[in-house]
Length: 295
Length: 288
Image 1 (cartoon, rainbow over the protein chains, first blue to last red):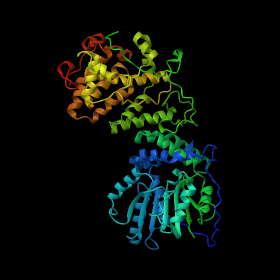
Image 2 (cartoon, each protein chain N blue to C red):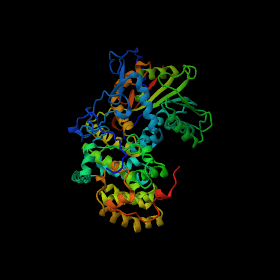
Image 3 (spheres, one colour):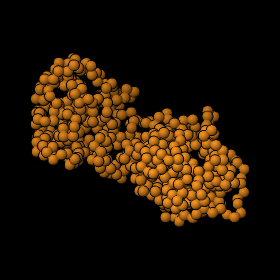
Image 4 (spheres, rainbow over the protein chains, first blue to last red):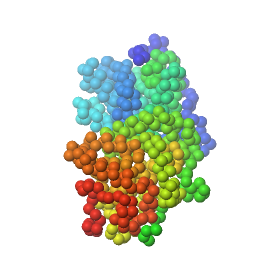
């Protein structure tokens, strides 16, 4: 497993770049803008409902499928992610975990703060566009000590348009989004909302599948993804199509340098444009942690 | 032929001309691109197999994928016996040459040839259930509807075929799945675990699908007295009865709604199973 380093910004902060519109989205058709839904090209307006359909369908078996398809490794990645962020080290945080439906990250954040820093004031607001996923998260949290406390709350909202009345400007210390941003129709919109709601000095952190650069690993990974995962979806969840979409959407996501640039375009300051700087690769690039700071 | 009840059945594809009537509708889309509607169910399939989808719902699999799914679906059917889609997948991935043998048997009988030519489907649109309810008491059609009502099932719940590459063999598989309920009606089997396993034993003896034999492995989930009855009484009945009769896939059930049930059993050479897993005979039950 690739060693992960704690995020340290270089002393000379890289300059904040102007927001250019290097749009990674598919170029618009004359008839309207299109985007990718896995390997398919669909009208932009319909991606949201298609993704909703996928997650309505997978919600009840989501955690089981995560364990089966990653052979449990996703837990290591999420542990790594939260350990990198060290929530609670500098006092209680107000966190927002977006696309956090089933509560994996939120729970880890709260546990990390509690176990390492005896912090019971850190709060996490779990935001997800899909009510079924939130329901799964709510049920999981009922089994923990955080249920019915102000430390966790659940909100149904769109990451691209967080309602300004509820999610005010400059109000959060930590914004996390884990394995969710590739399902959003417009990544720049999500990033600019993240920029809006974070306080100055606060951190944006994203854990997402990324490009594997090693050709041998990449071949094995592709074989596994396109052969085993849809079959596991068929067997465990009775749903091949949703898992087909999920593995295809990983291939469509921008590469690590491209995504880091998008983060900078939204106004964040990141580390250098290399592995260990703006992002940290896990397991050869199968997943990566991208971070940025709002200066 | 028997009775005046004309069946209405939807031709599997009404677009293709008669000389090609035996194929499923070929999907023209290649696996990697689709300009179809965004309905998730109709999206094109990406698999590692080099085959193109040959009919609606076809998911071509490589040999490794086929084996993986065979093992996985068998295990899942055992773990969660309500997963009918897993039983279906197990049947398809383990079918092997059984479908070829069955198709050839169908081709050897005039009735079977008619089935393969016309490719009738069985669902609530193609069956006129009300008409069947009005048939005389001891007819096959009446017994079938009576069984549907008693056991509270519909003819609509069958999973479509996905993993058989040849369209004609896929139809044979689909026909088997859809006529399974007719075997229930013929003998009056209930729908709980023990009768279903007894019927699977009969199907193995009559048709030969490996999955039907594998499914008898699920008998470990029965209570010991039921298991003893299954192996002691019903499996011997199934072995004798199933091998004694003609291949039931050659029966054009939709032509026989008005046929008397006892006469039908005599024609096929089958006899009722031991008591305990069947619903009462239609003539003795008053339906509203």
